[in-house]
Length: 335
Ligand code: PHE
Image: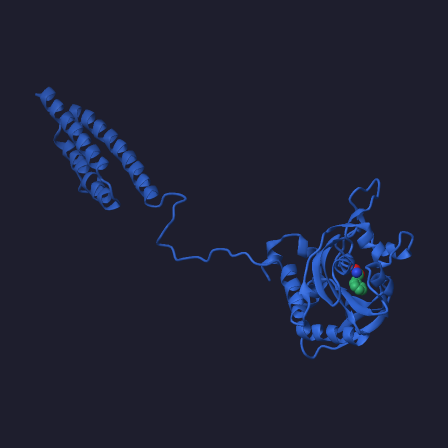
């Protein structure tokens, strides 16, 4: 009798186990999992009633069946936990797109602040009839210095500490120190009238600080024709300042020296109660015209050169020119 009852009850633990495992495996949603938990493991569930029924067993049987039922409870609990965490992770697989999230803006690129400034400057001159052209950054000594009236022994060459392509031989190939060599190249290739602006990178062999970079942009300008005077230079640059800095901007011209202009000037704009120098300029030196094959008794012209980074620093209150080329998005995304 004892043996029979033992066998029957043991079987019913087994039965409960196979029923519970089958039902758990087919519970394919969180609702079904919860229903399973209530049916088998809940306070009025099948496992609980099996354990409650133990009271009617003989003491020997109670121990055996009770131990089997408690083992089953442990097994079912851990199976249930596994299924539950599986179903949670399958609802939101890692790395998948959650289409229920609100839309987010994709990150958009933009023009570099130097490029924006260059375009604004060149556009102002384009509207006054100047054409935008570009020239080589790797340049010949001849164009960078000689044709601009800066001979090899001229002290003015000290103004442009040069990066030579071959630093041992100092042969005649260098990284241009300014955009002015394009004055010579344009005149060599074209007859007057000429009106061009030339944006581009320049390089200097010097240590950097808040106002000096070893590479930077310049925008060069050149106008050559019959009868061009200093008044044309001043009028054109004044109009440029009005377009880029505003209609009420005051400008100031002072004498300055560059070997390729005569007379030479620098132009400043009024800024916070003081004067800020924004470019060098002047009437193209007769020797530069002659070097390019022009008749300097017939043609005259003016030239100017400015640094777009410096102008952008002024306008945007940027205190260190090195920000332009350090590629820090915290800086670049402000433009
Ligand atoms: N090339 C000169 C510089 O780099 C600027 C300049 C250009 C001055 C044209 C006069 C005329 O400083």
